[in-house]
Image 1 (cartoon, rainbow, N blue to C red):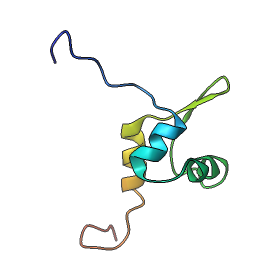
Image 2: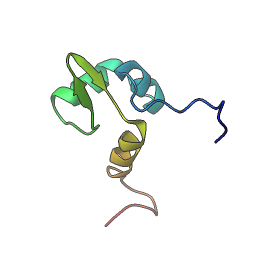
Image 3: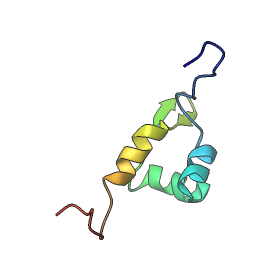
Image 4: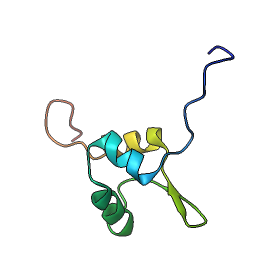
Length: 70
């Protein structure tokens, strides 16, 4: 990584994570209150998501296909 390359964000907002996973902000908020599929951080009143941890969590819910876990 070069010195002038910006680092990727450590944590993103609920709006950003919703866009990244193709779900609505409403779904993300409901998940946070009920199912808790997506891991998140609470920083005071702010909620943030680590996109790599979200990817890992979603991979753990994979069903069907040849790559599905038994």
